Image (tube, rainbow, N blue to C red; front, side, top):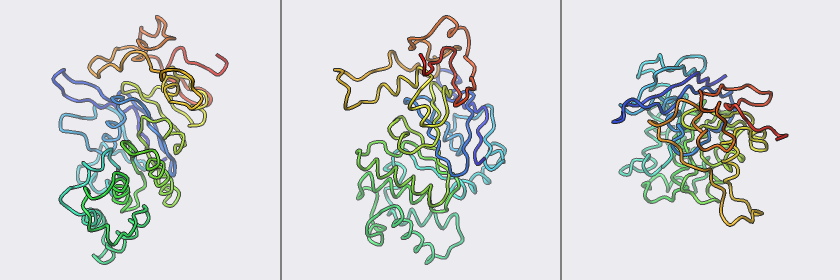
Length: 321
């Protein structure tokens, strides 16, 4: 087991008081596995990844849980020890490369900084590795592109640069936070294929954060669906996409446009995601769910272990329903 997140709860101090963004979340990632964390905006996906990386903002803190990486609890590590793990053993691709890359340095300088910070390579060796990385992620004419600034590159090229930086030290875990957001469909497919090839070539594990179930179908081995800070269903990707049990997962799948759909409008899940400070003490999806019963509003449903998945629902949907 490479990563084992156990009962993680992350909270923030806000003008509304202390608000929980991640609530009792547990999941694990095996070596060489791609796990997709799926859900609408505000479901807690990115906060989960930042909790793992130890990059929460100053008003955030992990109030309970454990994050085991190679069997060691990251929450017991000092900031100095975490810095050594970040980059060397864990890397992250952030959602928007234009804001993640420094606009006043060339992309070559930024890749070199990552290599020299985490390795003992000479300057010449680091330069050779930088060019190799750029070639690996599909940047044409690497020796010329290293002199470019981020604004001179397309969105897809900037995302490739971010992947090159993340892979500079060949980490064991790569966290990709919405890596295809704002890219056109063709470039999205190329970036997903690149991440998949990195997994195959370096045997790394990937935590893929997305709201797009089409992305999940392309790349992930397993999927965990989040809603209002909790995981409501997890299991193998093929099982969940072919036969979702939780009504929320079903709603996400029905919202995907299809060529053979003759409906005038796309399907929408009724209602809105409640803000974090207004999440009810019972099933957070109950007020949007057509299958909700009185029992759904009388307390939190348990995480039920079934043969092929886990599901947090008292009235989950099975294939024969």
